[in-house]
Image (cartoon, rainbow, N blue to C red; front, side, top):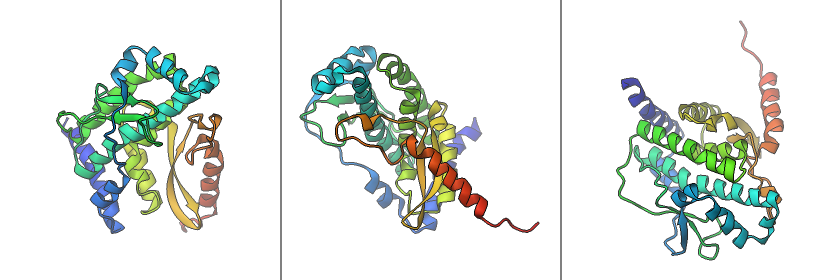
Length: 267
């Protein structure tokens, strides 16, 4: 038990050390990665209510998006909503954990889907503050893994969200602190640390995300690469996300080629 209690702190310490090596202030860096939450009214129903009665979300999507009458687009709409839930609700709590060393657990009673008119362009979800005690790293890891595993059957069985879409979105959220510095620190060290961090969560998120070194504009960086697609490209004005699985094979091949071209040390 003592080992697991230490391990979460060690991940955070390794992350903080990596930032310090590149003269990055963790509070400034991670504060910049946190989106400002909106206080506008317009909550429709909570995530707890959706999980208990999936028809609430199905019917709301049909009301809000006329194209969702088509089953494929209905699934795409909910898949994108789930991605937004992961990136705009789960990710901030993970970032707070890396910034402060503790973070409050997710509370599905306080996570609300908001009306289309009241929400901003980035998210229709709002996580209202509550008085739950912040958790230390290991407790946060275990609690969050339990929650995303419990939510998965509803999104899979009732909404048809694929395993690749669901778990890769969760994986992006859990890796948010690493994405915040994707082009500011040593990419090999960042990829190794992010991969190790995701593997600690007892869920399938690490199976659907690969952290790989890449190069953009002659600058080396680290990228989370999905093994799946959120289906955003099917929607009007959509497209492929930069982490989409459609890019995975080419990027993995590029990494392998660059590795094979690197001279090996003499033995």
